[in-house]
Amino acid sequence: MKILFILFTLLAGIMAKAQSNADQNPVYKDEIVITDLNGDTKNDTIRLYLKPAADDPGQYTKITISLDGRRITYKAKDSWDRIDKAFKTSNKNSVASDYVFIHKEKEQSYIILFGFPYGAGREEISIIKVSGRKIEMLFDNALGEPISIADLDGDGNAEFIIQYPPEIYKDAQKGQIGTYSPYLAYSLTPIFDIKKALSEEYNRKHYVWAGMERDPDIQVFYPNDGSKPKLNKSK
Image (cartoon, rainbow, N blue to C red):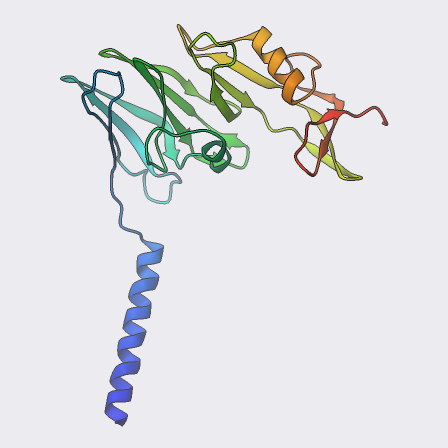
């Protein structure tokens, strides 16, 4: 019995160490997404791959998109990581993936990739448009935090809404006081471009409106319950 107990103890130790190593070094695998990207009823393939250099953050550095006999590859400026949790919760992903967000329209799709979230923000947000047999990188650079992708003006084409996180500098009753940082709405068709009128409309509905630029001198009250912020007039 004593020998069996010793063997059992040794085996348990070996298994625990193996599990610890597995947790610290999870098995790396490519992210493969198969879906119709251009409305032609044929399956297309997205492959995220190539892990960043050792000790570098993020999950993938390359993406290859294959459709209808065409293949194109893009490389991240830094690295791509998981879809932002808040964005994933409030927006419908057309595919089951933690790394690739796809917004589909009638005959085109937008692929959104999220750069690694450093303390100062993401170094890149990548938006790839697929329409017919055309694949193009609409945007690939630093940007504020993605909030939503939705058709704001009812023209059948989605807009991309972002916000640079405001600076919160003091607590208040039932909320916090922070800086003014408006939502910005960008068109995705025909080009990635800011839409001033839609940005103002969106802010008046969901935030406050004091212009397109962030302003540290304008105070905004942010309620703890997540309701609509308002300008703070009691300075």
